[in-house]
Amino acid sequence: MFGFCTDPSSLDGLAWLACYLTTGKHMAIYWSVGTVLLLLAISAPVALAFGFGAAAAARSRFLPLAWLGKAYIAIVRGVPDIAFFLFFVIALDQAFEWLRHKVKCPDWDQPIRQGNDFVVCADAKLPLGNAAQWVHEVYGFSLAVLTFSIVFGAFAANVLYGAMRAVPRAQLETAEAYGMSPRQSFWRILVPQMWVYALPGLSNLWMVLIKATPLLFLLGVEDIVYWARELGGAKTARFTDYPHPDWRMWYFFALLVFYLGFTKLSEVFLDRLMARLTHGQATTGGEAQRKAA
Amino acid sequence: MKNLLIGTAALAMMAGAAFAESHSVVRLGTEGAYPPYNFINDAGEVDGFERELGDELCTRAELTCEWVTNEWDSIIPNLVSGNYDAIIAGMSITAERDEVIDFTQNYTQPDPSAYLALDGAEVDLEGGVIAAQASTIQASYIAEMGATLVEFATPDETVAAVRNGEADAVLADKAYLQPIADENADLVLLEQDVLIGGGVGMGLRESDGELREKFDAAIQSMKDDGSLNALIEKWELGATF
Image 1 (tube, each protein chain N blue to C red):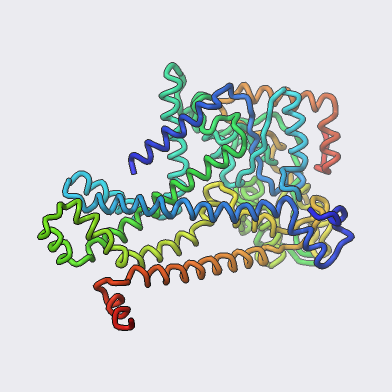
Image 2 (image 1 turned 180 degrees about the vertical axis):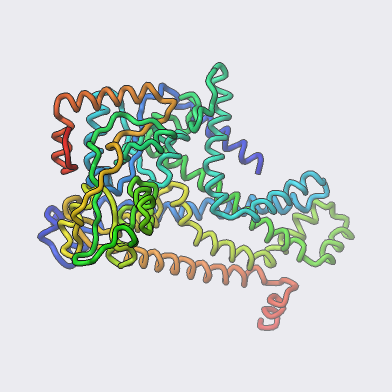
């Protein structure tokens, strides 16, 4: 990257390090930090939406809907994350391709499963075989986001379901006494008040979600853990201009610092949010705020 | 949730329709962690013997090829589920793998495997602890020999295990271990070599006979005009054809 990097073997100290840390391969690990942040930025709100939907469904008086919500929560929470991740990404991918195959190639006469092979017509491939590499990467990433959202959505649903039940019954009775319909009392009374009960559980989930991002590596997305392992491994001079012994420890240490810093930042933010949500609530926290003021 | 799933599926279909042309790009899957066969170079690109070989084969077979890296552990499952079209990752041809996928003819000779150990260490190959990469021919060889096998996901970790004393020696392709032994004074290759496997070939889906024939013919033409031997010598892979 820098002009003086043309012959790394003649460099030492900081100059060598500057060149080493800016190789094309290192750029990949910096990009992957972005990937992780993007994953969090997308899957956290989507998971929250899934959770909200499922919690609302589980409370529904329409029984099939309530069953659906409860089944989703119970099944996803009960299955180990890793099993779910490995299953879901393959299953979703094949389900999409199967659907497309049915739509696009109705006159295909060969079986889709041929022994071990999963064969759909070329038009049904997802992404298409001739699509650019970035399309494949975006597709893989989207599958990962969807899987993360489904898994964490179930946990969020359980938290929100509990939070909705924690809102004092008297509040809802008062709303009914004012003549609000169930829908009105849900949106105007229940939802604004439940967040304060949900936040401790949700902030826990957020921490777990941050720590779960290395699972991306399991899903075939080249994330920071993949690159830390690849870059940290011992390199011989025949195949690189920057030979070094096994440096995985340093790379993993950097990851550790990154994750710790990130969770610390989250904690500070969540504490502030909690203080704000507690304001004016009929909880011990709200009461303490009122007295202090 | 259901709506979202259906929505995503619909979106995916529309996105696909935009560039629905013929299936013209062949995606080559490799590991990218096994020099000199394949590795990621400083620029972050796939490099090595198989990179040059694969590019040449694609030129000869008149195919447009694209390189993809994948974990070694899941390299076969991802091929059969169609994430790429061929494996070119230093994969030895074995009867066990041949049941699941198809191979082209071999493009290297059966490569001797070698043991790498700490200099001066007394290694008991029959009863000691030997490291190997998981799901390799070397791993199954050690398991059959009766020595204690420790498996690792990447080749690099197997060597690290010898260094930190977790394993007495590592068994891997000699072409991979040779440069490591050359550059590290504390590591040596043991004298005995082991001959396992039927040479390295490209792996393809069993339902993809047409592509297999194309690559087979291209490999044959490289064998015939000696360009394959030149590549093997350039990357120091051992015996030529």
